[in-house]
Image (cartoon, rainbow, N blue to C red; front, side):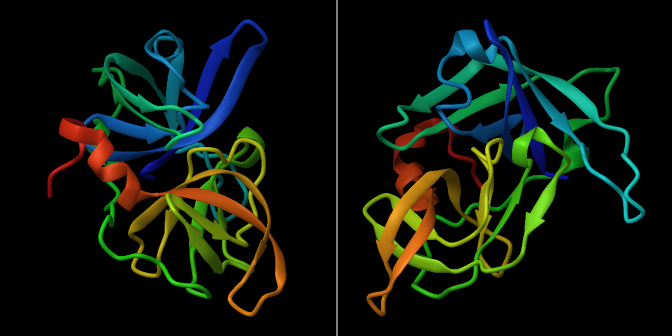
Length: 205
């Protein structure tokens, strides 16, 4: 429930990504999803956009992004954005959705298992559970085999303790794993690389 669909209005219509709550009324997603405060003003965070065990759509709730709280790093650098989320008397308290724990200390290792919760193609929330392995680390990037689609940008990448260790960023191309094999990988930005850049918006325990 801490992971939401991000809807961004622009001249070509509505583009979609994924985001997640990192602190009180604070949302993280990619810079290429919400690149600036002007775009943030036209964006919405939609929670509970998912299906129940019988495949029925659950009621979802849309919150306006608060562009007064905004910090970002360019797509070519750390590709993340932290923005505020407006609460509303007409909607459930944002505390209802909870907060994800960020792990900026433990560096993943090759073959470690990772999981992504995402809104692929802007659809209902899904958890990628198969073929999920870390391939390698490159500077601020974490490369993994986990399957993603358009709309997955901004998804949290979890370790086995369900701590966020990276934010999904893009397709990463072909990389060599620890055994020298060529692997098609997806790529995230390490939370450990984001922590120092986030400054005062980094959530406290």
